[in-house]
Length: 89
Image (cartoon, rainbow, N blue to C red):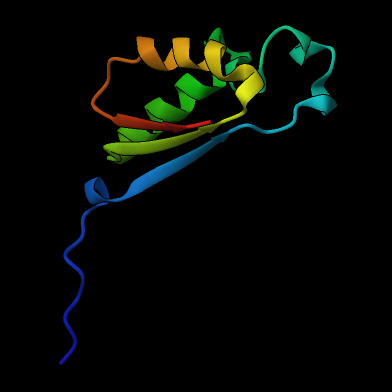
């Protein structure tokens, strides 16, 4: 007799790797970290959070590169959606 998991997607935690080496996009990423590059005038990181919201996630872990953490923290601090964001540098 097997019990199926009752875990909903809101109980799962997504992970965003915001510490990717962006050397391939140099010189574009010289002043702006890869997670903050705008696509259609919105940072990639913000688009990822919005997509996770729409999917139903309520917890996200963002893993950051130390050299870009202060810039990325500003974007995360401005986020006002329903997702709880944990950070690791």
